[in-house]
Length: 282
Image (cartoon, rainbow, N blue to C red; front, top):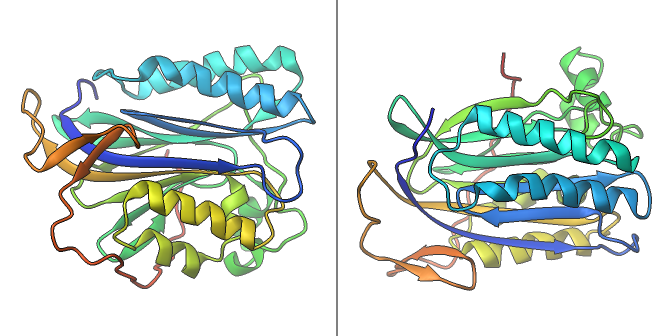
């Protein structure tokens, strides 16, 4: 992996403290080619500090074209060193634009139970795997996947930045495909919004910022019992290294990314949800 081809994206992000918590312990980075969400834990201040320190470690990747797995591993290790003295902990998950054998890919990484989803064609699949007690129960056959969402121990994570001396992330490589949409989110979203409703919102042909806002609003309306943070990233164009961005894409300061010419596309396009039982990387 290494120097990235030109990937033109549109993206948006949103966060909300929810209806119950007093402090938003989530943190978010949306700065191409890095998109990260961290969900802090450990009390009123510690979780807030842990998530912020973790996201800050990834901020140095903004605007670079040479990011790879080794870089992501280094940022996770640096985050662990920064968070450990605070007494807090945090999840971290995200996507990074990179290459593999000269082809554009997204490097997906995860520690904890925040998630990455991918909408490709008419399907929405979960790419990341939760590091949680209920996921281990599902993997072992002790618990059905549809029972995990409402299990009383669903919030117990088995890996976290700050809680482990050397947190072990999982990684996946996903080809960068025009038309794909990625969602990076904290469990404040997935704990409130049912999978079919999540898929319906992701499959609308609305701009990413609008989709991000609607996802957060849906989680708040459903109860908002946790902080909610989302990043929505659309792949607009993929070109070889040294190429120029595709015509029809223009800069959009409101989202920090680029947006395609909407043409005569309909405002929404709902598709069925296709569940996937993701597997950890070797």
